Length: 113
Image 1 (cartoon, rainbow, N blue to C red):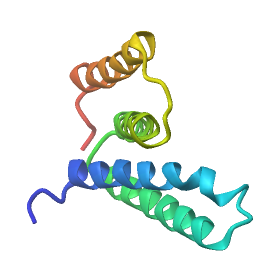
Image 2: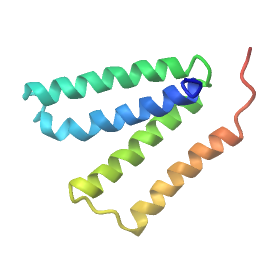
Image 3: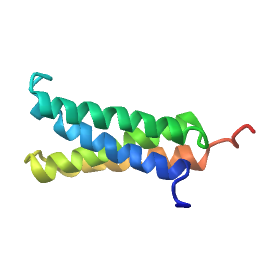
């Protein structure tokens, strides 16, 4: 699995972040067992995968991408499944998040070896 490097771990970590964030409303303040366990599992897995990604990627970049994937995915989940609005201004804000992450990658200094 050649794709399972820093970027692959980071992508999986971001997806896990969407999984745990999307179930938070169903935990009812972490008073419901199964949704709370689901949330806790994916939260822990997400952070573990993020920690694997920073073996190869700069921390600031990895964290920004991780949060960006989580943000974009959670907003998309809310719009598609929870009836949350996604108007032009909110969409523009999401584009700015992506632009910021791309900028961090484009202007990143060379990693120390």
